[in-house]
Image (cartoon, rainbow, N blue to C red; front, side, top):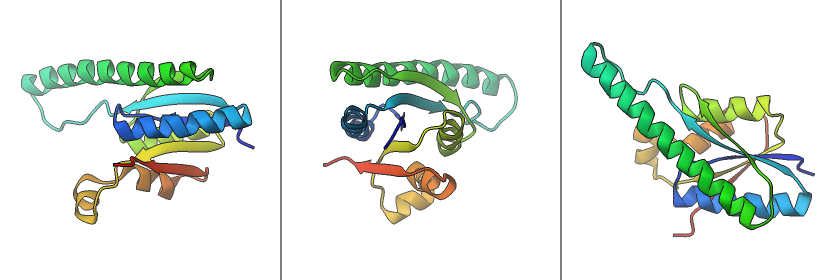
Length: 147
């Protein structure tokens, strides 16, 4: 039923819950799996040398975090006997990177975590899961941390 599952991760416990659900689905349907981490390469607004230095620091830290997150997800899949491809994607917003990756990879399911923010937090911080649901035509399985 699901030939290619896309699993966006962000290093959180909730993303790990999504990895666990995706692992079970991949085993049940013998699915191809791709794990991605989306980095926004331009999260700052500003000018001058301080901005340039901050940007370089940010990108180094974000890339290190992304690599560690996909490595942990890959190990989790491997421990269950599921082969997975991984990728670090750059996009202006996380939801755009996820939606675009789903299209380009021809995934037929996105499995992702939701942090379960309340209405005010969503208004201020946004909801990646909500934006993905609003902008993709693919089925999306949104999982929540049991905490």
